Length: 354
Image 1 (cartoon, rainbow, N blue to C red):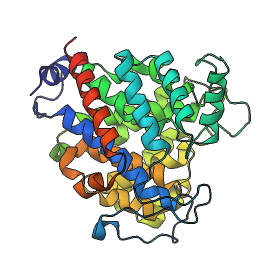
Image 2 (cartoon, rainbow, N blue to C red):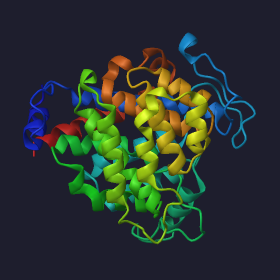
Image 3 (cartoon, helix red, strand yellow):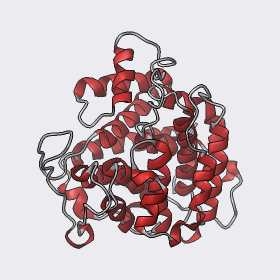
Image 4 (tube, rainbow, N blue to C red):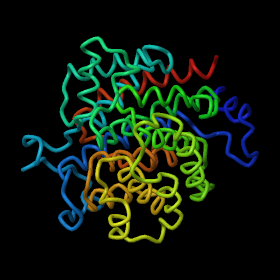
């Protein structure tokens, strides 16, 4: 056990029954692989609707090629997009700056933009173009057109930030302004701020929870309370949905059918007020199985981002034992991801020793 893992639980005065031997490195790796695997599995089916997809992912454990995609050219199996790319960029910025800084994250987004914008959403591209033009990261994510700027381009890259917060042994409440600033580099919208705080709070909780002690009501409580905390940010761009009510409706997720999840949460479309509760519904229904990822994909919508979010949640709670090794072996970017993971592990060690 690493010293900072013990320090994390002692400082936060967690439940004494909580297992003190939880391996943050194992959980962080599983989150990272979950994001990449979900991205690669879901990408070929992006924008397809419920009823148009019926893939037996559980049976053959292989990626599908991209054929006849609405937005992108044909690609080989295992191709990933912005979910994996920008999660890794977030991780690299945390490594470079030994923590979360607005300038470092903005710089990483610019570097990623210059590499490729494959799969990027319009809001993220617009914000990074502003950064390239010399604009400050405090204003680059401003929303000009009503109804825009609420996509899931922030939530897809949050998992490394949660791991760093846990390594530091600090509460999410200490990071409210920093997390809102992180979101605001690209998406200055109330809905995105609310979903950012809620998602990070849950990831931090999962990283410190033994799978056998998982409590879905606790997760919903965190989602609701942190959505409320997020309402103070970017009020000039209000959410068209009450996120607190949307998250509260997840109490019965374990009993929902695929069709009911689709109907309740906007078909899993990319705006956060649809995508995030949609993804959490599948996770809460199957918190210990990759079936949650497969079901999220087969239910349509923003399949790559939703699946990557679910994969990250599963990894945070269950660690590497839940990740199908076949998917790692078949992933073309596995070496690059693994290299960044090792570097990030060193950061977590350093942060935890402060």
